[in-house]
Image (cartoon, rainbow, N blue to C red):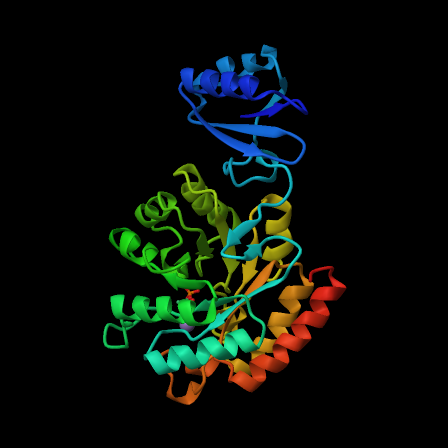
Length: 337
Ligand code: PEP
Ligand code: MN
């Protein structure tokens, strides 16, 4: 259920409704919009009849059921789009956001060089994995905490906020102490213990769509994070498994307008992991901008041939510079800055 407050409802009325929601066994999630406050009542169905009576309370306009299983992530539970501020970058607002960098942090030099390329190109955030979810246990697993330290130094030098993956709930505290955005990777989209773990963090989360998860399942995973108390979630479409073998995954671009219809959360597209080959990254990146995404995540490496992971899908700096110019043009057509 959501309780929609009247325009200009007083703080005392909001507090009274919040207390009422809690007294009938629900948790109250406040969403203050420009015009009005919406209070989400989250809990099981048992107290539904009591909630309905909130309609008689001062300051309440109406009480409406949310039909989707994802309550807090649904459009009804919030007025307008969620904008997530990461440092001075606003994700989900009028500005198109590009997150770029290597698949993995390999060395200080490699990351610093990548960071300067990303900054020079005009991207907003730096990515780089320190804990890598590799298919083979014999592949490079990432530098762990040393990689996080390198990311933190790159932020200090460039001012770019940094995004990195956290693979286990027990690592959340360590990872959040170094970086600005916690990434939940495609292999962990339905790792519910991890979702609760990042849900208790104060840092924003970039939640990737699993290669086998439906849009609704992705939204249910976002709901875990929101319901745990973290309302700063960005969703990321990164390709799903299909029968097609020409590309690493199949980029589900229709997920962008579908998600924009169903949720207020920002939507990012990662064409790199979707296509798996650098030549295909620019066309799909541009298509994602045109489809209405709020941002892109792109793998860029100063020397892809020697990359320790995902070299074949990483753009060289000069290709990335060109793509950034094209993105800017398309973004302006779809009214993004
Ligand atoms: C990544 O972004 O580093 C990554 C491993 O991506 P995904 O989880 O989408 O495969
Ligand atoms: Mn990668």
